[in-house]
Structures are given as structure tokens and as C-alpha cells.
Length: 355
Length: 282
View 1 (tube, rainbow over the protein chains, first blue to last red):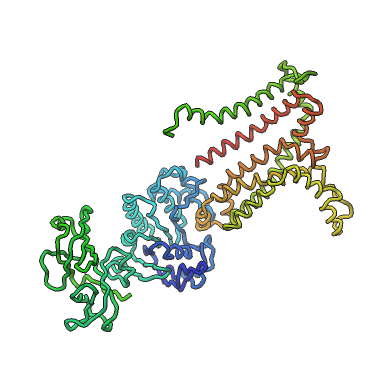
View 2 (view 1 turned 60 degrees about the vertical axis):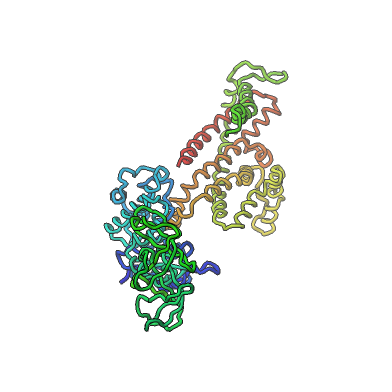
């Protein structure tokens, strides 16, 4: 049985549908990410699970119990807020013990649990500090400890890394994964940062305009996006929009401005003239000075952006289409601006998108 | 602050100090000096001889007025806190435009003269006033209730007049309260009552402290309300001061009454100041 089962949950604010008939099932022990652009409804979905909002339709079941109408204080769910929401009038220990006090845990056991939680987030010795005396990273740890102290069945994390600077974010990401593994609690994280979702989660649900558009492992989401939206939102992508035609005894994609039809990576069960797109990740594109065998596009180099280990090369085809590729910086060294190169990719690296 | 000369800057910073010196500290020093003088038949009506006789007389003569003042002011402050907190809480929970309207209504009475508003209470409370006539007509009472010229009417007047000074600072601290703290408390298992006691109330303490000071301190020295609404049983310090100064023309006695009041009010002020400083740091 799934730990969290959301069936057909919708939430409307006036004329705006923030969450639109969402079905989602999360297993025990998963590190699950809800990924989407701001305003896609992911935070509202999180608030529905926490109980701060009530769905207009649908049911939310945790561990076999329908909690749709249960108030937040009675749900086996705790949340780490994006702003951390630490109580400014309580010290670190008081913050972590807050939930334990509410459930009437005796003082000594409470103190022991607080110590345990402080050790978990490596904040031993900070028990007497007030929130305003902590750095952003330390606040984040205390917020995590406070949310985990009651040992919830499900921990909700609202943009857990958004407020941290880049270096700290990477460290904290690893720690968060380590902590999740150690406590075994199911984590549900909401983020707009695709890198964060890909790096943290064992499974991702991509959300757009209140709907879940794709659910899968990070690799599935990245390598096999099912729609233009997912391909474009998760990572960079080169999209070729066109219509199917018959060529070389097989279907191929005719794209305006590109003379040769683009071969499809796999046979598709679609009629001729269907509108589809082919998506190719920048790192899957090869550049060569001479025309390679098979399908290739002539393009001019517009710019080479050095980023350390890898470089981003922007190209423009003869018909003016912009392309983007990622190359190891060593390979990009010989590329000069305005040089003409041939762009190709192995058909299996391309993804056919119908949505 | 570049572009402003050092002299001008010193002047701008010094201005409030000069103001306080000339219009606050100096008059206070004069009053303090007069409180140690002896009443005399002269102009001005005192002779500086450095005696503590005025203070000694204070202990024997006006103790009742002081305790009366402190008790009535404390009662009025407590009632203001109860009523004011509820109103401030309701306003802070009201959305958008309505909130502005309610705040406006809280401040609206200030547009009418304070004196007129206190007089209006006489018309409402007197034996042939609005309340008694309504109660008589409804058959609830057979004879008019003694609502005026007693502790009740003075307390009512104080609460009515000073309520906005309680509401506004409490509203201020409640409006500043981060809603996610309330949600975090609920999320951690706090029922609405515990959310209030464990999070909202402690975080609004600075507003409560400020409101209590703003009500209590002027209420202790209040003169108009006990004079208009009070009776023989509600002699307050303000009234005594008036009597000594104008009726008895005993400036030193009046000054001693005033100084004793200042010293007495300094204590809660200092306590509150320390408290607000600590909270401000948090």
C-alpha cells in the first residue's frame, strides 16, 4: 500500500484552478520531488497535503487513513517551510521541542530527543541559540530537525535549498539525502529547480498549470520526456517541430527550413502528416568539420561559452534556427566563431514528442 | 551623509537634544526645585528654602489619591488590554480593505474633541440618561441605576478614552506576525488554543507592553475624566494637583505631588523599556 495516495484532488481559488485533478501515489521511504515552474500549483498541492488548504474535490489518504478533512495539527505529516518559520521567541531547543511538547512528551524524553535531532543535523551545542543568531544554513538545519522531531510518516519540504547560496546548496543536498536515508522517513520536496529535483529525488512528478504532466525517475524524466513542456523545463533541449512524412520507406520528420527530413529514433505508431517534435539534448549533439554519414545539419558557430569543464556552443543553421550544444571544453578549444560545422546526433539520442 | 558639513550634522543630531533640554528637562528641574520650596504669599507664590516638608505632607495627606489613581489606572489598563486585544486580533485577521476601514474607525473618535466625548458619557449615564431610560422602559429596573459619579463611570471613561492606544500597538505587532509561524505551530500539532498561547501571544508581548504603558501612564495622571465623571469616592492624583495648584495656590505642594507621580511612573517605564529592548534584539 502506498504511503500517500492523492486521488483526483482539485483546488480552486476563485476562477483560478491551482491544482487540477491530481492523482499521485508515493511509496514508503521514497524521496519524491514535485517539480514545476512558479505558479504551477506545486506549493498548493503541498499545502493540501499539510492541511493548510482543503481540496474542492478529491481525497488525500495517508497510510490508509483518509485525512482530507483532518486539521493540520492532527495529521501525521510535518513540513519544513521555505522561510523555515522558526519561532523567534524560542531558542533552538525550544523550536525543536515545540511539536513534542504539543503531544505531551515528558520533559526528559523531550530533551533526549532534542539532543538526538541536533546530532542528526550536526548542530550539537547550538541548543541555547536564538534563531536570529543563526546563519541561513544553520536555520535550515534547525527547521529540518524541528520537522523531523515528531517522526512524521511524511515530511514535506517546501523549496528546502532555495534560500542557500550555491556552494552550501550542494553540501546541504548531499546531507539531506544522507539524513533521509538514515531516518527512512518519506520525503516530499517541492522545487522549481530542476537540478535540485534531479539530484535529490528518487522519483519526480513534473507539474504544469495545476496538472501532473509526467511522473518518473530522474533519468526517465530527463532522457524520455513525454512532452515539449517537460523536455524544455527539465534541462536544456533543442526542439525540432514539424510534420511526419514518408521517406526512405520509413516515417521521418519534415521541419520547415531544414531540407532533409530528420530520421526518427524509433518506429512510431502515428499517421503521416501528424505534428510531432524531436528533442535532442545539447550534450548529445556532435560537431564535426566534415559532413558525417547520415543526417547532419550545417551550422555556423555564434558563440562559445567557457564554463570550466564544459563549454556551451551556440550555433545558427543556414535557415536561422538556433541550436545549443554542450562539449567538453578541450573539444571546444579548436572552435572559432563564424566557422561552419556539421551538427549530428545518433538517432537513439533523440526523443519523439507528440504533446 | 556626504555633502552635509560636520557642523550641520552635529546641529541636526543635537536638535532633538536641545528640544528635550529646553522643553522637558528644564521645566522638570524647575518643578523639582519648587517641590522643595515653601509656600509663600508672594509672586511667584513660593520661597526656595530646601525643605522636604511637602513630601512629608504627601505621605500623610494624599496616599488615598495615589492608591486610587494607581488602582483605577491598573483596572482601566487591564480592561483595555482584554477588549483591545480582542479588537486588534479581529482587525489583524480581517482581509484587505475592511482592515483599513476598521483601523480608520478605531481612530475616528480622535476627530471629535476629547472633552465633548467625555461630556457625552454624562448624557448617557446620568439617572435620566440614555441607558437608564432604556432599562426603565424595558422594565429591567424599577429605579435608575447609579451609573455616574462613581468608580464605574471613571473606569468606563478611562477605558473608552484610552482604548485606541491599546489597540494600535497590539494591532501593529499582530500584523507583523508572520503567518507561516502560525501554520508551523499548527503543523507541529498545536491546536488553535495552543497556537495562540504558545506563538501568537508571546510574539505580541511587545505590543501589549507598549499598549499598557500608553494607557497606564496617562491614566494615572488623568484629570478631566475623574473631574467630569468621578465622585467623592474617586479622588485621583490629577484632581488633587489641580486643587493644590489652583484652589490652594500651594505650588510647592502641587509640585511635590507631581514629582512623586513622576518617580512612581518611572518604575514601570524602566521595566517596560528593558523588556522592549530585549525583544527588539530578538
